Length: 347
Image 1: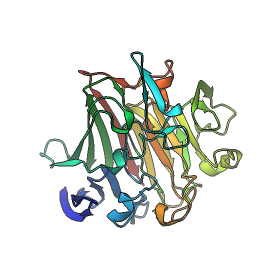
Image 2: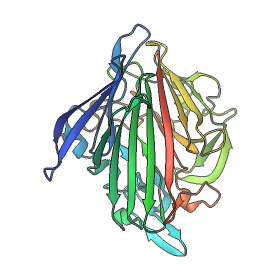
Image 3: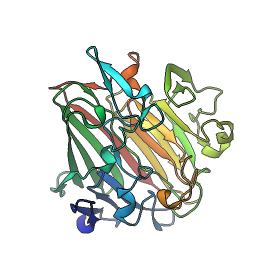
């Protein structure tokens, strides 16, 4: 296995951004960067051995510095939505940034995707069989309204089996809410192959979160049987997506089957044309399926449009701070947030 680094530009204040590429013994590789602790290319073979990148990326740092759809970024301090942009901890109400109408989306206006993380490269020591890159960010007390100084890490791991593992950790100096995810946009046919709507998926989730018109959870869990959300058997995104006019496609959170905290299957998606597959396992309790409904084929979206990719964002439930019946996202001083998601690429 090999690790290479090269400059990828600099931030607006002149700090360097470095692109790091991890290549396994088959020549398949991923690349990452410290801006947003972001995943860039994921280059893997199809059934004929042809390599292609399957993760939407920009070709320059300038687009990542500007507002963008979150291509490959680490999203925090709280991914997805917080209704009314506020929550209460120990009787104290904390207003956070309302950057999505009256709600908070993905941690606020300047979330973790728009910070420069520190970098640690961890080469294979001949026992793990994988190379790793760890990014660390210290989010100050009060950033975007969230209490506590939060120290977060994102660890990327890549091995010879074409397995990409992403691990998150966090600690805090005050009680706060934490929900971290990776926001990669996948197209298993290759990023320039057109729509991903005919990809076929199995999702290991018998329930989805009911949502209101602003996509804020109501607190109710809905069984997927006889709904457009039933992917318990392999089904294309296209099969029932037209029935979701209100959300312009899938943008819904699944409860992953099995006990949270254990690594278990969450989804398996295949592209029938290329033969590439992506299987996801996670310790997290939920996963957001998003079919890139709001990509507008403009500069901000890299020229990509609706359904040109899909996201499978493993996470805690959106708006969990405001629903006591949801698995808690509350992190207290002395406690340790640690979650893992594995992506297995096949052909």
